[in-house]
Amino acid sequence: MYYLIIVLLFIIIVMFGVMIEQKKKYKFELTRKNREIALIMKKCNFYKNEYEELQKTYKTNIEISAANDFEPFDKMKYNPIYKGKKALVGDYLACSYIFTKKALESLGFEVTIVHTKAEVIRRIKNNEKYDIIFSNNVYDDGSGPQCFEELKKIEGFNTPVVIHTVTKNAKFHFVVELGFDGYIEKPVTQSKLIPMLEKLLQGGNNETKNI
Image 1 (cartoon, rainbow, N blue to C red):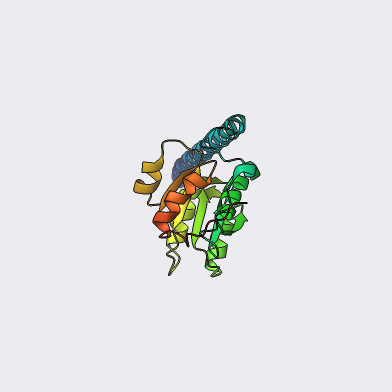
Image 2: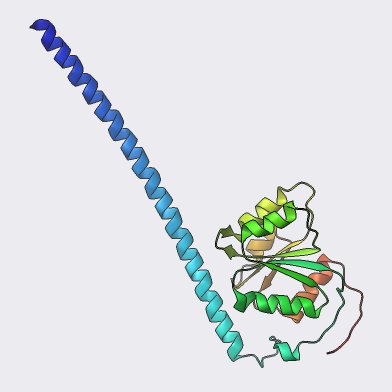
């Protein structure tokens, strides 16, 4: 009888210890899941705000298309000072990248559009050569800063990377703090592009031609 009581007490102690360990394990797992959920919610809110800002900016620019800082397609001058240069543009919204593509092509660039961070990285890892890269601030599969960090890790990579976004008053953050080579606010136009390209690509061939 005495031994039976000792065995029962031992079993109870072991079970109690297991329960405590399980409780710790579940508590740790719950904390981890809550952190993951909080991070996902933060990203979702960020993407939502960026998308709303983009839509707002696009609508505003359509409404003020006659303004001096906006260049409608039918008024954009063909000035192929960067003829022969290649640009890779990462952007997932047609209402955004169509402006970037048109402005670059009007300056002579051959433009490739991709829609995800992974596609930007894949093309560079496959040794596709570009003179300049324009990265969106957000993608469905990540962010512009993440894309930039992955690009910098590729051996031999030295192509200028410009962040193009609707985020206002963020030039210092992207260029100085994060290290991008340039920053340009959407919608992208010739007047915004030329000063930046002159700095990053040391000017063009000075050939000018109007449509």
